[in-house]
Length: 145
Image (cartoon, rainbow, N blue to C red; front, side, top):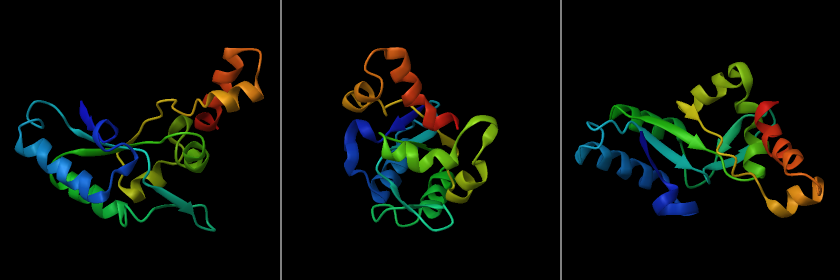
């Protein structure tokens, strides 16, 4: 079980919010009740460098330091990518058979969850106007390459 940043902060979540939330999970006894994940639900991604390494944005100046802080509380950190562009950027970090695990470990991320929020109706309907099955395949494709 875990806590998800989106439910309170939406896209405005910051490094400080995550640290404060980890502190609250421990101090309120939620950790003892089985809540072990601190979920950063989108909006931490920056750009990739020339080598393809994904970096954080200004709201998250040092993801490794943040992950280390969360880990110091006995918790785990996971990232939930958001829509379209996030999936394209993260495609190199996740995939079948553990592809990209070293890159995730460098950032300190314990778990990467794809919740299929990449379904953008106007895009999917334009690319596959006749069937929902084809739209679903388009949405899932970035996570399985």
